[in-house]
Image 1: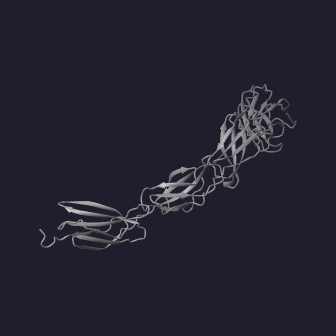
Image 2: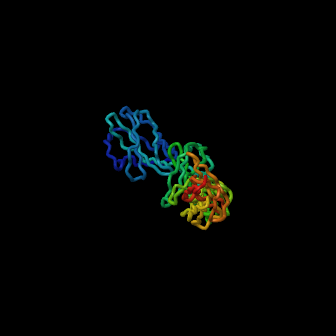
Amino acid sequence: MLFWSGCAQLPLPGSKPTINESLPGVDATKVQTLADMASVGLEWKPVNDLKVQGYVVYRGESREGNFTKVAVVKGRYASHTVDLKLSPQTNYYYRIATIDSEGRESMPSGLVSATTLPPPEAVPWVEAIGELPKQVKIIWRPHPYPAIKEYLVLRNDPTKNNTWQELAVLEGRLNAEYIDAPLEDGMHYQYRILARTFDGVLSKPSSIVEALTRKKPERVSGLMATQTLPKRIVLTWKGLDQNLSYYQIYRSSREGGGFEPLTRTVDLNYTDQVNRDGVTYFYKVTAVDSTGLESVMQDVPVLGATKSRPKPPKLVSTLAEHGRVTIRWQEVDDRPVRFTLIRSERKGFKWEEQVTKDLTDRSFVDDKLVPGVTYRYRVIAIDDDGLASDPSEEAEVVIKPVEGAK
């Protein structure tokens, strides 16, 4: 588009060049313009006068506004310049003057106008793929304009007051995919794409696309742990009506923390084979879905314990008479169902043990004694699961020789 005015004798508003009135000027009617989105090329007819040493170009954004010097072109026969870094779809006005060897200028030419081209259209197709764990995948169709250099990926972030944030700049017109991660679970995000040309012009924004990140599985409920089984703890919990991959079990020796992964299972129960008596552990169980997304742990862990051993029996009397000894005891708790008696016999510097099992009475008569020999007795209580107590306190007996015996 060309526009010129016959008012060539008007000084440039806002500029105060030194004017050489005898210096011939540029004919605005002979000025040609060619506009791109961010630049305008200007071409004029050279002024064939020995006093002319070059040209100066001024630009304004309105007819009456201030004009800014944008180019100084040396050489009488020069006839072309390019005004760069302009805004697309904008009217610009130009005036050109000649300059002499002392830098003085002719009267400026009449107005010449040019309108930059509009920016590229928006990326034609964009899609955001949600329901992914902690991420959203954005894909789009490459922009048809061949001068596209790169793409800007923008996100409207609900965690940052719903403001558009620049996530990435992807170089290459055919580069048409971006994965946004890591993100919050179960959150709603919006995206749009801008294309940028090699000369820095941004396209119109693409349509806004939306996606929701995958929600965590629900928290596992109904978690229970046994406290009365021997050498094992059985965990049970309620199932979730979701597409789960497995349940993850955590264990700690203290309630306040230190939970480490123990195992995973697809069942709604798990038996922790502790193989120790009277041990306590704390447990938490999470659900993990098919994408690896894990639910939140329980706020309060469940306490599990293995069955403790019975308490040792208490010896209540030891009666030695007529070459035999009677040992009596009583249980300290109500768990024992049978007892084991251990007799130790002193033979020289050694002690030999004799074990009598499966006693149901609370007493034992030992009539196989040798006078003058020292014997020691201990009793162990055993419950219905076979758990044995520590031995009782020891009772020591010495059978005196019978008077007159040879």
